[in-house]
Amino acid sequence: MRRMMIDVFSHVLPPRYLEARNERAGKRLATQYGKYFHANPGLTSLDVRFRTMDKFPDAVQLLTIAGPNLESVLEPKDAVECARIANDEMAELVAKYPDRFCGACACLPMNDIDAALAETDRAINDLRFRGVEIFTDHNGRPVDAPEVLPLYEKMARYNLPILLHP
Image (cartoon, rainbow, N blue to C red; front, side, top):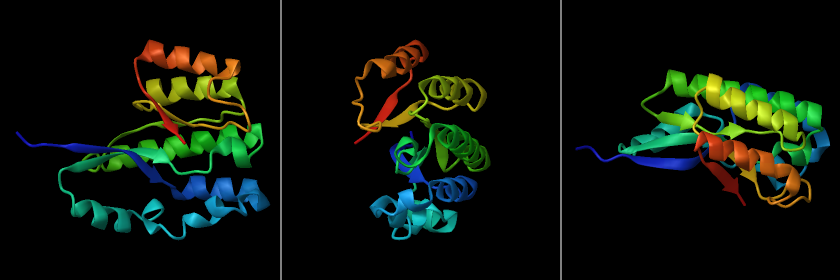
């Protein structure tokens, strides 16, 4: 029996998402987050990622979008659109490289909880994602803020995980 390891925090920055996020965020990306993807080419280059993965033949990746969290750099309308782009691109990667990527966890616009709940449903039901990723700070709101509870209830109904990024 072949053993498989799953890397569940395999961050990625797909090209359409990265371009849309950077264009819409502008100067709000003038932080370490706005710059660090240059230091890790595996976030944007599949060639680099696959060369690294080749060193660990028993490992597959569960894709998640790399920070910063959308709500920290985008207005709600832009966050909603960028989350959709991110999730579509991750779904494309999983479909194209099923031997490398076992699935993905949805990127959510947590500054619009209704849109986040709708994107959760779309990602799980239409894109076949296996969970969601959220960050520990939603523009100063803690992860146990009352407005976040509907997401926890929804994920409990789906019986799927929430990956909490500190």
